Amino acid sequence: MVAALLGPVEYGFWKVIQVGLDYLGYTHFGFMHGMARQIPLYRAAGESEKDHGTRQITLGVTLLTSLGAGGLVILAAMPMAAEVRLAWVGVACVLLPTQLFRFLHMICLADGRFAVLSGANVLLAVASFIVMAWWIPRWGLAGVFLGLGAGYWAGVLFGWVRGIYPWPPGFNWVHITRRQVDPLVLPLLQNGF
Image 1: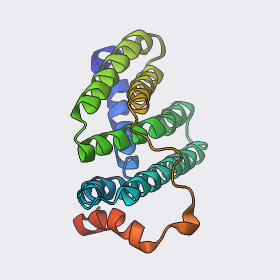
Image 2: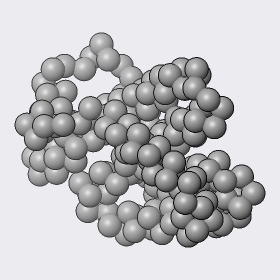
Image 3: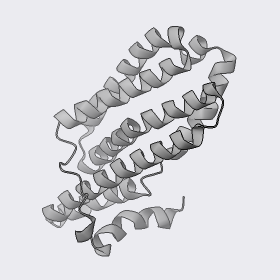
């Protein structure tokens, strides 16, 4: 649908920009993958405090790195041509909900909450489709970003209502020990970038 609505030139440009968005998805530095590995281990060992702390730390890292990477993308896009700058600003704006949705995905896998994951994916698809179908003919590539943003935020809201996101996120970096962080990051280092 997106290809038909954008046309070949704008769709090709979107696919190039989408590669950047995909790579920005790794700005969590492996914390999400480590979290998905550690949560079942902590749950099996009956260590609910470590389980909850891992969720908080990972959510905190996800928020900080998404906002930081988004800000850097916007700064880097400032000297670019207007259309290219708009595309990269769109990527920066969609990065936070994308990463929060990935967090939901990893938590649902770790907890075996596949009904929540399925519901969030359905909302992502439906909301994205509806918004894109309406806005792409009017705004072109900006309609793609509106659709993605709407879809990801719908899934994130669904996950929040279903209790996926721990609050508050783990921003108390003073009390984070290397023992807590190593199990979260080591899976990424072991598997490579």
